[in-house]
Length: 384
Image (cartoon, rainbow, N blue to C red; front, side, top):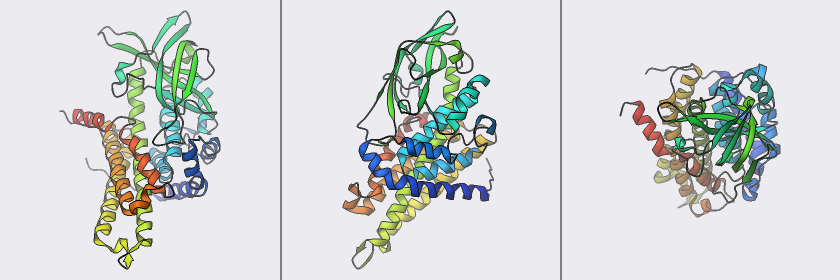
């Protein structure tokens, strides 16, 4: 497919504005927040204040009304500095805001989107379960009708933004019956924190994204009204698949930003580190590593932006979303690994940002579809 797109001046303005914010507000505290495993309400609210939540949501619901490339550039720039804040932003937009904007009723949009888009509240997306990860169809959480209400029973895990001081609730995928073909009928519900039977547990001791919130959700005879159904009953699996397509672009941007940040750190260090009488960037073995890193990042960026262009222009983009997420996440791994190598022994210490980049990139090959599952998605898309 031939694709031409033009990166006009507005994108550069967005990039530089978000970069300035990330450098001045996030970078000075990123290491400390990571060490303490501390979610930052302040940084999240600041990201809302400068318009990083709800960037693609129409202005009438409190969003910015921008295009998807604008959002991805913003994601890239936050991830260039810190994966934790990028994770909060990515999940807040792609998993919290997007499903309500895309599938919610008018009443749900009016109720939830303004605060979500202003960064005053967050919403989790409860899909993963202890026995339902890559096999999302293995959901065991159930919702049974009881008059005008539904009773939800089950457990979700590894849910980003579900248990913060700002969290309004979580979107929960459930099984609500069996279709005529024998397959489960899935329905998503918006369940607010504080609902009786809805309890949370924040998960600690993570390798990466330590300053983002990851939680378990327990639903013990949790009663919600029919108004809590997201969109139409039975549309839950379709909603989930569409949400993951968009989320993969966001995770791709995180991989791209992580790679960019690790590369820049390595390039700076290579110009300062003197061995054999000259900066190590002048040694061919190091110079070639840096050249390969720059090449891979540029290729990843073009693939990701193409997928965003397809999404923005309402063209099929599922295959490209899978490809860009897969490639960007694996480039993040390769670049972060080489960046540590260039730093030598110093790259293993938390005094250097590259150590955090090396840890943060690891989840990118797992979240929003493992690299193995994405290869399956791509192979099916090409008819295999």
